[in-house]
Image: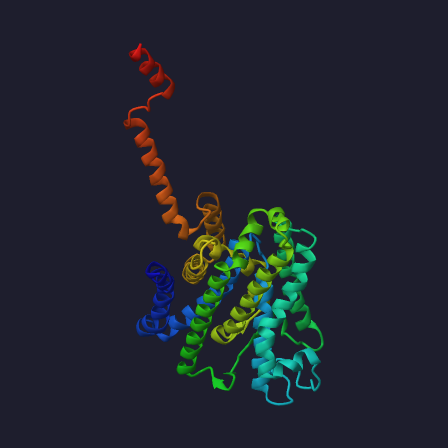
Length: 378
């Protein structure tokens, strides 16, 4: 009983450390600018938690999380632009003569509807896509290509919706120049710091949800689907339903990350939701360690930080550096940085086994031993 209590307490230590770093240490040592950058990285980390659940536990190589990230981001962006415009008025990027907005745009004028839509819209899209693919046993590279194509199509749709007469999404320019966030002035440093705390709080909640799922009966089924779907089906479960649930949860997390990204960064464009950002989100998870709970979080923050710093010094080479990192990790360190400790322990174990094989005397052959004993008795 004492050991069980100690084990449960030790499981909360990473949460306590993360909470201390995010809520105490970071605000104390970082400037407002750096704190805003960290808030941006936390938004990607929220997306990474979902990818870690779907890919790390369920084996679903999701190359199109930018779609769900974009759905949440554009839902929040439309709400903020409509809120800035005022009741009954169109956002400033639309023609001044625009006096009619379609229902799917008008519904984002409500804050409550927007908050619900941020998680619900990505989840519904993921539900439809998941049922259409997993029920037909589409998986592996085929599912990855399909999800990537969806990201490309979504980015194109955003541009098309901004190129029509209504100019609902402002095309390639995206949504920007936000003034307030649910009534709070975004130019106020105190409110920017509040956004950081909101992003940090959501990240810890998402990690707690992922941990609970991974350690539950459902988590065992999800990992079993990754190993052998036929065995899961033999036990009476439908692997498609198990995978769809993880895919939907990952999509909802991506939508929440995208919704927080908009007020933190102040802009959302089709370039933030297409194929390239979707792959960048995946690279962070791979480098951090997709099979662990905190690896995707640390990997996403590390890759986002590297992109912010290295892309300024090497703007033409950052994409190649990113791709090289992904190849190196997949080829030589499948468990990511979080798997370095296990890899070192395994290598040390193999080295010890080899040393014992050279130094220990060879074990006696039992057959020869019996013959010797019989001969001695004779």
